[in-house]
Length: 227
Image (cartoon, rainbow, N blue to C red; front, side):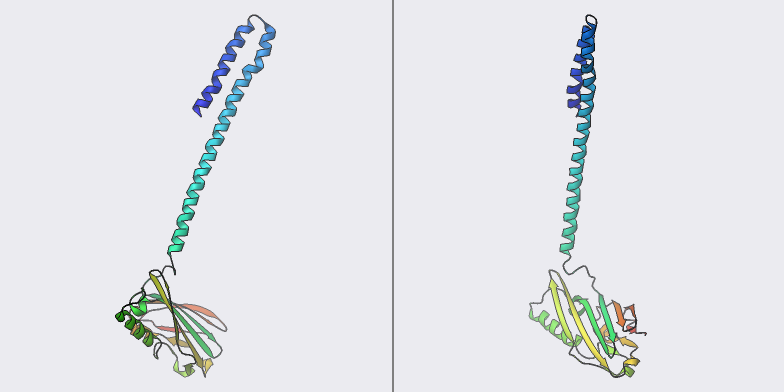
């Protein structure tokens, strides 16, 4: 920019000198040269403005590059999340209580159940996965209060999803209750007792009239359902 301004200023000085010399000998020549002396500064100003615009465009391009880099970084973080960030010891639980049925879904890192998240290949790891799954789907893990007289109507289902170094297990229980009006709580103390890696379970529950949330732990393992 400085060089451009200097190239614009030099012709203005030369024109001014020539105009001054001519002014002493010919008044008409002075009048003719006057517009040329005023044209120089305008040219310099135009170049200066243009240089400012170029600098601004450059800044915009640099800013665009930075924004692009940030977007790439954000995308990379999202893609590297796999199944999503989760913490060992925690899990999510949903309880849907509609009419005579109580449906329960548990979503947990497999670490809480098997003690690992990688895909088992050794005989020992495969045996652990089979044994822990059998216990998890067996009786005593989940219980609705006795006076509701509830029984499971479908076998407990499980599904394991793996993505890179993360893996999750989903477990589903469905109960049907003879005395649905008496349903008041679901007890998960058997789950905490059998699987010591569970430390904190976030619960969302919904009935045909309302919904609420709760947090379970080994010392507080019962969800109260209120109509």
